[in-house]
Image 1 (cartoon, one colour):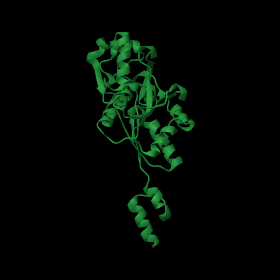
Image 2 (cartoon, one colour):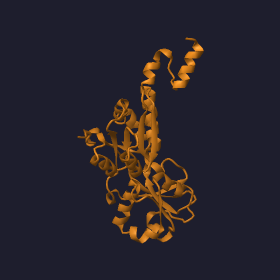
Image 3 (cartoon, rainbow, N blue to C red):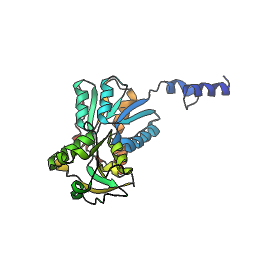
Image 4 (cartoon, helix red, strand yellow):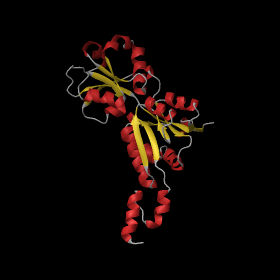
Length: 261
């Protein structure tokens, strides 16, 4: 076999190893991860670190937790699912789609305004008077559900309902505020931290909404290498990445990891 021919085969198979490693490399299966939009930056970095360490390929799709769960229930191929709340993990458990599950991370909600702040809102107490448009994530999206709970608890949800604009997910909500399309919005603290186009004017009372928990879920019939990725999510290396992105990393013993059955 000529060297040129060898490299042609490698290119056709999209492999990076030499001819002698082709059988091993071609047996690899890409780990498919579906993750909540608020995890975009952190999970991308974690997956990159895992792939660099393991040499295994991965594919990630980000979106609203509810839409991703519904895709899984409809039969979309996936190995690992990371939601921004437990509700959608429960929905998968009810359909016996879970192999293992652990509560991995936590977060908090903040009020943000555009950098320009044309409405002149400098504190949450000014929102009712000054805000004409308020951005929240969708009613079935975890960030929107938590925000609704908090506004309901404070008596503001009904008062502000005709001013609320819903984003498809929390990153869309963030974009509405960044671009000045609304006067104020509610997003996760981790989302507010990734941009210099918004200003945080206050944190929502964490007692006014359910605890924000991100379950990591290994799905039934996942690729064997996905088990390694699932374990890596709980590793000190991944934990440091999550912390750097502003997430609270939950103790493994608090996550109640278990085999579904």
